[in-house]
Image: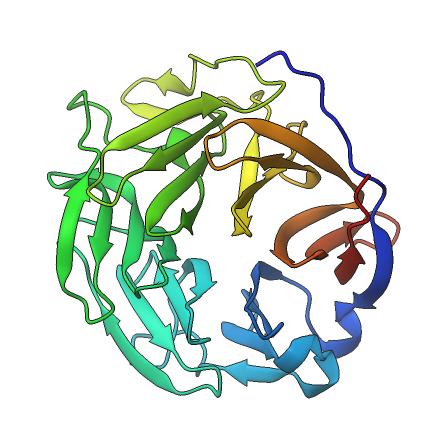
Length: 308
């Protein structure tokens, strides 16, 4: 889509916290809920980090570290809040979905398919869960389950049997109402599915051309084209607006957030002051896990959007 980006006013910096002061160095998957509670995952300590009302001085650690126990983690790839404030987590190593209460209580876990490796998820207001598998299964790549672990549907089966890898699909998932929104990471698109798994639309991300050479053939193995520019890395939906994080470079740091209407039409963009690993949106606030090149550390940022 050759459309010129329309930028909103510069973000106003409200707060920026150096996470190393709290012993946090490798953190991912930032999310905010309707009560402005924040959560992210510490890959070094294998714990969820929960900030009530966004207050880091009151931070709470959740989970018992790495392991195979019911309150332990393998290798989480994504997490989301549900409407009640519970935390849902996709653990690709343990091949399961976990549910945690905000006070740190482990509620449940379930597997979705014998061959599925949950890597991304999104929770609807009704409590249904869309789950993206890291690899194709005979049932497809996307699953929809109830909050009790009961399968509703699966869809997006592989078009070509040889394509077991879905690396081109890797990005993020959110919901708009009860419908699924997916943003692609390497293959730059925005897709919306109906509640029964039918593709509603697929549109290219602004400023990116279609990329056909997604994977490189190396004898029997396939790997990502290292020269590809990453398009969408993170996605949020708030007040019927879709927010997608854009790198615009080979690295994966977000530098731009694009805004789209529910029908996939481009609306405007926000230019971040500092490159971010993840972001989350609530009201006119943007929260970021961002990188500082000067000291090679991660910061938790809170900004206010002043629209034109």
